[in-house]
Amino acid sequence: MADKKNTLLLISIIIVLFSAVAFTYFYLNAKIRNAIRQQPIIITENERRIYSPPIPDSLFFCGEKVPLEDFDVRERIEREFLVNTYWHSATLLYLKRANRWFPLIEKILDEYNIHDDFKYLAVAESGLINVVSPAGATGFWQLMESTAKKYGLEINNEIDERYDVEKSTIAACKYLLEAKSKLGNWTLAGASYNFGISGIENQIQSQQTKNYYNLYLNEETYRFIARIIALKEIFKNPKNYGFYVTDDELYPQLEFSEVKVDYSIKDLVSFAKSNGINYKLLKIFNPWLRNSSLINKNKKTYILKIAKGNSALVNEE
Image (cartoon, rainbow, N blue to C red):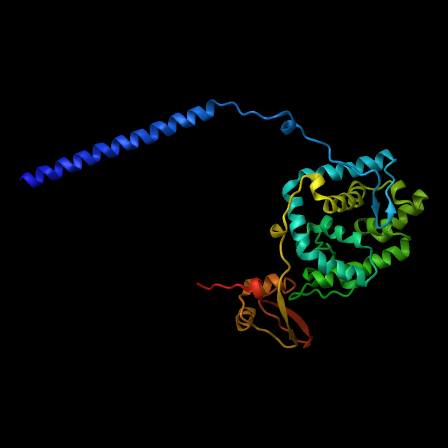
């Protein structure tokens, strides 16, 4: 009987102590929270200011001088500096992705004698991801199906090479070479990427000027070259525009090996597993594969990228 009383007494003491501790904890936290709420949030004058981003005294696109003395041109350029400086999430992602994709794009531009500034066209078009526009333009370079086929890309129910960064970059280079040959300079060639070669030719003829900056064009084409110029400057000097990205925060280049395939693959899931990766990695590295099979009736040779190293870490648990 005595043991039972002692046990009940011990339980009562524990309950009282727990209640006291709980009360003290919640009371003090409530006091602290109230104290914090009552503290004014002080924002310094410098923190309150929103600055207009700096625009260099001179800007160039593909070695061609931008006439900033023209108020219309300057204001168009400034708009794109403002948008891309203060749309922080998008521009940060562009900077991170560029570390992965620019080396490949730069190499191909150089091979085709295309000015290096056109790598920023891919940023302006797609943000360096495989996107599809409402009009059906697809991939890093936003190629329409007819344009892509004209410059050698394969598009069918199983394959869409607009999603292949390397092949679509080559197609874009072929387009730009043709545009420059017909229009005379890189700025007009760049504008035609948005407006079409014949569209620019028609405007040159009707407005009687071959100077892009003197042409009266639609809003989208006006913004296109200006955005590329602004992105180029921000990429060159990110800290001037408030972007501090360390090397370890940049997206690394992907590691892969290559497998030649000149036969049909009925099940890409099984194919992936037989090569030591999963289906997700196979599709990420080969986004041009648009189905779960590759019925290669013509026995054409395709190169499939197989993730390896840190890019191929697979945990099936």
